[in-house]
Length: 89
Image (cartoon, rainbow, N blue to C red; front, side, top):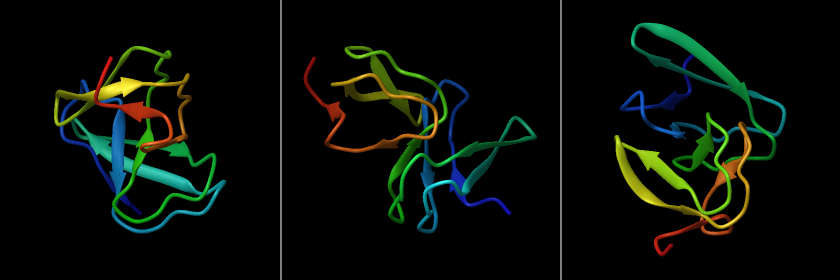
């Protein structure tokens, strides 16, 4: 079951459409391919989950646009929110 949305193949995050528990699958479709990552923690509805690793200081992409910069290393499956994302470099 697809439970997240991704808009662009450049995106490093997806947005979950329902809350996800730690260890649960976060599934999405991009370019007609079904993909999945495991959530590393509980993810509230409408929050972001990393689908690509992002090194501290690098850009985080959503909608094919930079939405901020990683304030810590972000691993696939991590919750991406204000605790590890800043709009300032």
